Image (cartoon, rainbow, N blue to C red; front, top):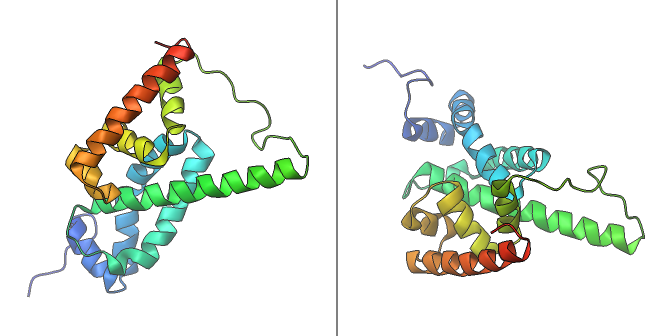
Length: 186
């Protein structure tokens, strides 16, 4: 009988199979292997280190509950993208609700301790504008340009057609061009 591979030599598929069976070591290795990936994707979505850390932690928690549901039809990282997008949207909704509550009670202090600094980096200004796009446009741009996914892989992560991803990117480019021109960035 062949000796079982240790976690560092095991493929994602092997680790997933073992994690589904309750192997905490395999699950831990899977998290360790993909945490930076999740954090980078989360940071692209929110643009703030603290929020990206919160999102990545939330994805880790959700992954613990959802790993049993992973079917392996697509790449594991594509599934993680979708989970990360959902966690980022949830945080944005929560933040929006808290902002409305804060304004309703007349408290006008920013949690960050002050007004956000104006970035002189054109790339950061562009990503900040991307974060303001409607959800589907933002997600498509983040996946294709921020994470380097193909339109097909982005479509899988977003659970939409490849053509729809292309349309969202087209619309986002038009909107970004207008926004960046009015901000004097282009």
